[in-house]
Length: 117
Image (cartoon, rainbow, N blue to C red; front, side, top):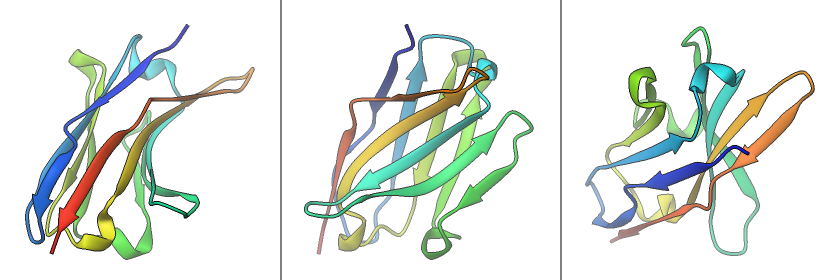
């Protein structure tokens, strides 16, 4: 059983920063890709950023330059550094991990990020 536990969310003023963490219950190199998604109220869940075993990263176009995904392999943790936060970044942020074959997808429980104007 794989567990992903997010932390680091909270309330921040516009222009501020937050660092989210996702702690995995197993070696993160077991996963092909780890990612962050977010879901704002009444909207679909959208991809924020990904990182693969080779440390190759991708970002949603609208977030490039403000968000940075990274990992700490020694702690089986993936981080999302979020800078210059805007009210539009308010959402529940979810950690995601994919492994296989056989292909499996795992989700964390989410952490709330609220950016006040």
